[in-house]
Image 1: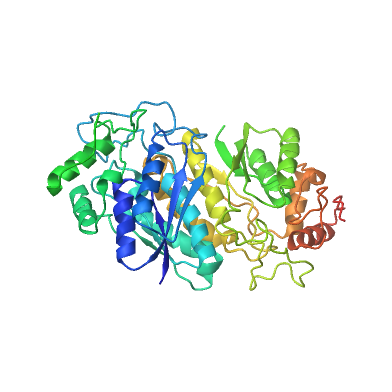
Image 2: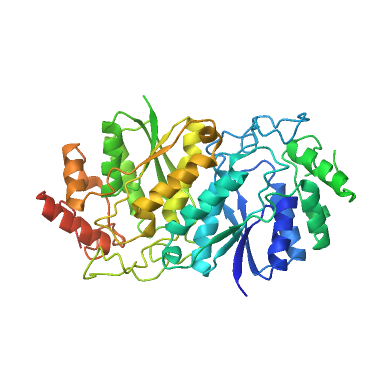
Length: 226
Length: 226
């Protein structure tokens, strides 16, 4: 079995991405990050999901992105609510975290080399998303090109592939795909600004995209919104 | 004054790189990493150097690369000593740390965006070095291309440059350059495998390259070797 790293937040997208990697026959090494996110409840979700979808290893890496600030996800900036278009690509909202996917992928890259793996899965999506630059196909291709020059394993001929199975799916298609693969969406967490009890706000971009996705997929949304 | 991030380990190369950035008129934000390195004495050196070469800010980021292993710098693998050629590029030694520069540059990238900076300095060298893939010009170019697609600042037209002023210098040229710029090399630390008291071993690649560099530069080496 080939080993693959799956970047795994405990959200709807990365859980579907993990299910796809398993379905493709990879031995999965899941990697989550405690990065100072205000919705760290997603890490509790991640652990709950792994308990039902076993992987070879699940590692939670602690890094301090809150030290930089610059994002409402890691500081006390206000998370935007009820935006008219939650996937408005021209106006990147302050939920964007500087260099987040670049940092996550770089840790995954280090782990592939130690494990002897050649595959990384990341659940980015460039359709029903908030216009984050590090979710776009051209960024992923550039990252892959860089990664293939970056490490000892790669210059020894062990070519690395970054898989983005969700990149051109709508949220509804992601939900249908996860559904077919048996993902229990009730365990996943999407909200950027949950209540102290961990309940979804129902109004941030992430909640809006999730709601619309379930509606369009014709699958009932079991998420409890405040 | 333009702001620049300088990746700064407290070694001979990155200290010279920092002096160059200051000399070029940048307002310097220095970034060091506590990454589980066995030679963490370099961080003490970094602080000592900053006390003499003031910068706008010096940040030490803690990240756990030791959790991956795969390197003699972050595990109990043996650091190779007295290699016949300390800059043998065909045989990358186990002092290589998987994805290290990629991870460091990614944190610097996040910081540039929050600071509104467009310049990162990294003291990599592809001549008197140990063949690490993430020190080569083609890697740096690929990283810069990726970075310019990765962030909100960049897609808004704020083009990022990665400066590698040392990349094609010999160690002797680096030492001469630092000397002219007033670097106090007695404060810098290079050894991969220092004694418990922090003294240089004199036999690892890094010590061998340092010794040879001072010799060829015709500048006396004030380093105390065991």
